[in-house]
Structure formats: C-alpha cells, structure tokens
Image (cartoon, rainbow, N blue to C red):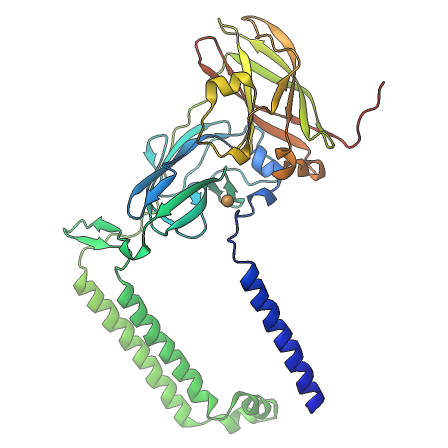
Length: 421
Ligand SMILES: [Cu+2]
C-alpha cells in the first residue's frame, strides 16, 4: 500500500467518523415507534381485532405495578396468508424489558404458556406489569401467533419514573425464602461464561501456534499433508481437553444438584381458554366498500338488521387499534386516556343518522374519514394482493348497552376524485 492510498483511507475514515459524530450529536431523540405501521394492513385489520385497550396507570414508579388490559376479537375473516392461531401467546410489545411481566390472564385463565385461540372468539386479557426501566415508553399489547409472528395491538405511552438501581423483583420460592430474579444466578452465569470462553480460546490458541491456520491449510492441501501435521502431542492435548470438559460438566452438575435439591422444570403445558362471543342485536353485512385514496376514507355500504327491542345507533368503527367515532361513539365510549394519535373523534360519518329501529333492515352508508388512514399506513391495503378490510362496528341502544359486530369485506380502491355523473 503506497502513501497515497493510506492518505485516501485516512480521509475516508475521518469523514466516516465525522458523519457518525454528527449523527450522534443531532439525532439523539429516541425512536417513537416500533414499526407497527409497517405491518401489512390485512395483518392488522383481519387477525386480532383489538378494542377497549387500557394502559393503566400511565405513570408508574420503579417497582410499582401497572396493568395493560383490553379485549381482542379473533376475526372470522382471518387472512389466508397468515397461519391460523393454533398456538398463540399474549405478550407486551415494548422497547426492551422496561416492565417485567408478573402475570397474564386471558378470560380469567393464567396464560403463562402458549395456547390456541378460536377464530371468531373473543378474549379479555389482563397483564400485570412491574416498572423496571425509567423512561417514556410506547407499549403495545401483542398477540404472538406461531408461524405468523407477533401482531401488535394499539400502542400507548407509559412513563416509568425513578431509578433503575432501586429495581428489585423478589419472588417467593416453593422451598421457603425469596430470590430476586434481577440478580439471582448472575454470578454463576458470568462464571460459566468465563470458564467456557477461556477454554474455547485456549483450544483455538493451541492450534494457532502449532502452526498457524493459513500454513496449516496450505500443508493440508498438499498430498500427504495430513500426515505431516499428525503430531501425537496434539492428540494427547485433545484427550486431556475432553477429560477437563467432562470433569467440569460433572462437577457443575453435582454441585448445583446439591445446592438446589428441589427444582421443577419450566412448564410447557397448554392453556385451554374458553372464548366468549360478541353480542349484538344487529346483523351487519358488507354490501360494498371502497377506499377513497385522495379523500382518505373507507366508504362502506352496509346492510343492517336490528333484531332487538331497542333502536340502535352506530357510533364507532375500530380497526387495527385505530378508532373512528361520531357523536354517538364519543357520548358512549369516550375513553380520554386512549392515545389521541390513534383516535379520530370525528372520523365516522353516516349519511342517514336516524337510529336503526327494532325489526328494521336498512342500508347504511358509513364513512370513516381521517388522515389517520394515511399516517397509520392503512391505505397501503390498496397494494395488497388480498384487498379486503376488516374491523369492528359498535352500536349503542337507548340504555347505553354496546353491541359489537366484526365485519369484513372486499374493498375497491378509488384512485382519482370522482367527477360528476
Ligand atoms: Cu410502538
């Protein structure tokens, strides 16, 4: 390498360092999302349909408990491209382990292992958390589906205050006493890493000096090269190493066994959770739907039948954790703690606002119109090979009872503004 090349490399190197430095200096704001918007719309709209999500409380101290709860409806229109929810796990999507999970219950049943969920079923989950890492965190409920991956629910902000140094996570042991899972076994873990790491490096080091890899490879490439390298000392060394490794494993095993005579294996059973089903006096059929690209609106024509005894008014359309409400929805289902960035308070429009009378069947034109379609990248559904949408339609009767219908249907994109005609 000549001087000119070295100089060139130095220039490139310092430019790189400067860029990195500038990036670090000017780009210290933390990422505000987890890429939930980049999940395909069919995955967000037609798999787990999240509603009534609550982040409670929104401010927690280190070591204090918080709760993430809500409901999911497993869409009847589960997409063909997504593995069926035969093995699912309810989880929390967060930027690293900012909380520890104390328990999760689905329909009242502890769900510490994965289990099946029924298509068309409804589940209520309650996840108990304990504040661990201070900060302002975006927290999602998440349904992990074996073969399909995690399906993120709506994200809300939760703050954890205090100092990480004060964090403890004591658990009661079945043999009496407590252990702090934050530090339990840490020394043993580090010890074994050091032991096996050093043995590994020693093994590589031995062959590095007798002779070096490249020389070895060249000798081996020659005819009879392996005989040339066949040194009996290497063989003795290898057997000695094998003896040391087996001895270490045996000592480790018997020592640990004497220290902890009572252990139970990690549990791997399957919770059989009974689903509930959505209750509604309304039957809703999607007659037609289109997505108006310039107007950022999902326009649905629904055929609704009220089989109940009270007039019903539609007040909310929820999909992918994003809520579109009208006056009825705001009056009946306004949760002020729901993240404003995924709620369109005036995002739902009905052409004929009169209630659906008992026994009546009528056509309803429902528009959910808001820039959220674009911001949340749900309009990407016009590029899907499976152009269908899904969501929950909520309506209320006069006594304030909520009726929920899960709907799904084909959608036709409308790319240009309609001209008169
Ligand atoms: Cu997020």
